[in-house]
Length: 259
Image (cartoon, rainbow, N blue to C red; front, top):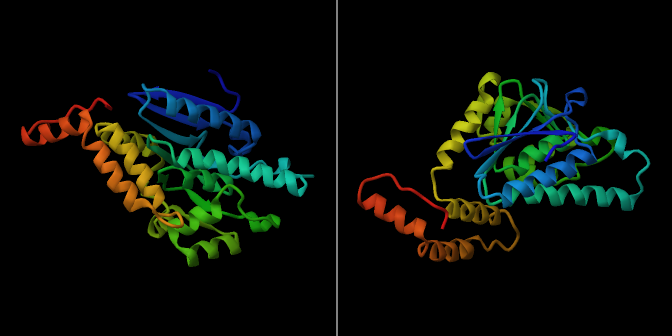
């Protein structure tokens, strides 16, 4: 399938999704959101794909925010619907059973920061900048940014960024726990692929269960412990678990089949 605003490539079962609006610093408009939803569904449903990387076209920006021109003239109902649409997509990414890395090259602001936070983890280039500057428009983040930023870096730091509308650099983002790694820009995608190559050697059902249980840790009325125990019991009966246990006992590398 061809897209207007997204480039895709597959290498060794890893899907790379590139937001491709460099003249707009890859700003998120409705077309981007709709096409991103389609490609995420493809990732989830295609058994030949094991993981994904989301990045931005060019060296200046991952995604510099939403396309502000689309906000003009919206009434309250339309604004709420717009935010809900973005939240639903980003929740779909967050809860995907296959790992998705945000490879952040340059500005990750507003909706771009929100998209990066919806991914399972983030690798940043040395020139990356993060921020939620919506207060400068008289708004707040609408795609889940107030919630995920608070969970990732804590309420005090999150409120400072949300209320001041300022940016932080890649090293600060790493120190805050917003990103997992900071690498030179030229090695950004290679670093993401290297990490996913390791993850892709593990049991797919176990990976999906880890993502599901970890996501529950942030929810009210946390049922993560119950889900963890239930998933452990379910996984221990799978062919992959039998293979993993046998391989450990036999001192060999396990070969997981996802069953």
